[in-house]
Image (tube, rainbow, N blue to C red; front, side, top):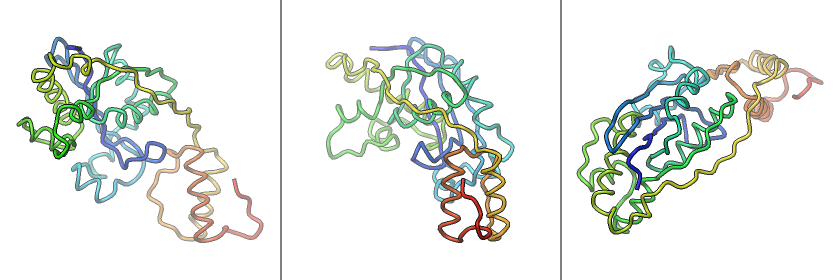
Length: 242
């Protein structure tokens, strides 16, 4: 069983890693079962945060307006994590977003980790809800700020410590880190021609776009162009599609 790890959590604009963006990233370093350091930053996702997500996390557009982009943060986060295994609740969700950001910045982030959700599925009853809030409530672990990245990373750490104390001797193998598998391709930024064409579409159809065009990847720009043309048509006869 591990006693040193990096507890991680991200808040995002949505669930789909290929389309959504990080709004907050936190890492908590644990050494010999004690918290020794932490890293946390709000992230400007380059797009509006939906009302449902804001209501859930408490993170608003105003809070991230002056925050750094993920490209400005991910290097420091990867360095902070070092070579320690990761820990989180539904860990692969957080790992995918972090790994995607790392790959897009040309950084390696191959890791092993322990998922407290998987542990809850082993040790909690089938009738019990196993999301982080319910699992913490079940084990009487206080959660003062649920759905904020640093608080959730700390909660995952406390949950792991509780599960290890209660069940570590009977199932020590369940608490060992396992390789985390996710192989994202490095995204290319939107081309100049794509951004110019998007600007033509937006101007022609008088569309109110709140996404920052400079933050779009090539595939995101292509999907946006397709969506606008499908709904509104091309900006002029014979216009080219990229």
